Length: 135
Image (cartoon, rainbow, N blue to C red; front, side, top):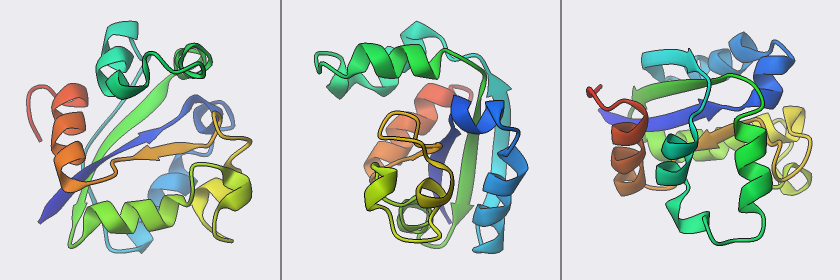
């Protein structure tokens, strides 16, 4: 069973839509294996977004991710990574498929509701960051 990371971002938490987002994954055959709500720490975000630290958008992203609690989930199922990516939609909500999470709930490229790992390898790395005790 493939596992992947989902982060429900501050914009969704602030708007009290956590349950709606989780239900999208569950209705599409995925199982929530682990979940917790937290205030993202700078050190964790720097590990998670390591490839973006020098990019000009990173400070805004970090500020946003620390602006409110987030929900970290480990979801599992057959082809979990690709299913989550499809359900999430494109990073830019304006370019997302209709009815994807980001199309329905995303505000802009930064405030885009959710994060999902891009590959199986990335999922393993990201899950170890957000769930250091394993899942």
